[in-house]
Length: 97
Image 1 (spheres, helix red, strand yellow):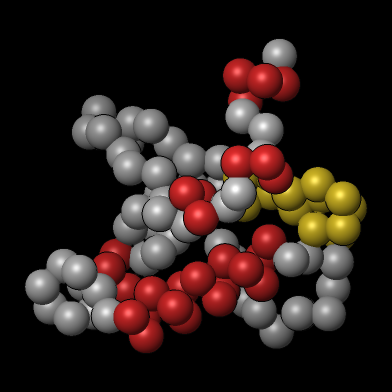
Image 2 (cartoon, one colour; image 1 turned 30 degrees about the vertical axis):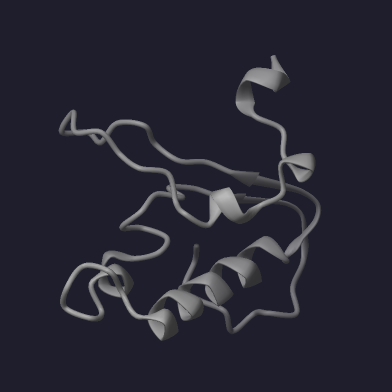
């Protein structure tokens, strides 16, 4: 998510958050905050809060995306935060077509 949360009072009809992947959101810095690759609860909670701020700016539609494969061809992992969203609140891309 955008790191500029200074505009927390603003809302938009549609909000698009891209690259909801591990290493992006939560950031690689948060994931390695403990030095062992697991991250600290505090660092991950801060990233979760930033994601929530971005999500809560949407008035009507929130679009979240992630990549399955990095430009290098390496597989990418969707953000753990996506798994925390109740399925009843989501529509997958395949359901939109």
